[in-house]
Image (cartoon, rainbow, N blue to C red; front, side):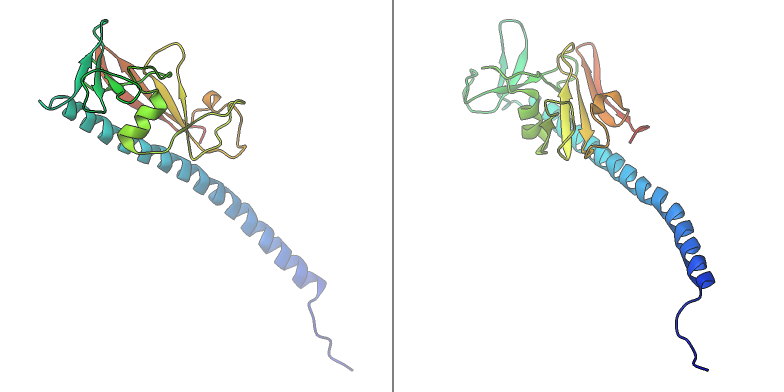
Length: 190
């Protein structure tokens, strides 16, 4: 009688069951890695922005700081050497409470838009949400339309969900002229 080579049906079923169990155990761990990566991105962004904003506040105290005050009493740190703002010499608005930056969602002759200002301050690439409200870049930003100066930063989600502002996976910056601006990290839906 010839010896047959190969696997029995029982051996194949056992291997498939073992692979199925491994897949059930491994998939949640893989999904958690993506969650951890999103959270790590937001934490690193928070650290970079906090450091950059503190340096900005310290620079406003220097005697050589190029500070412009407009007719409404708003102060701006100008980027160029001229003492008056222009399209080539815009500024970043300064909070009256602690000299931290205050962001506007729009650009003007006097100040950079929030995205431009953050890129100048922290040297990070942030992009607005797309026209459908999706976070399509590594870091996406949304400025509040009802409160000047506040914004949220979202991690890239690759169709994980539309309208990331409806989920709790973002870094939020709140400013107030009467209190210290602060960052809050929301990670429950990452």
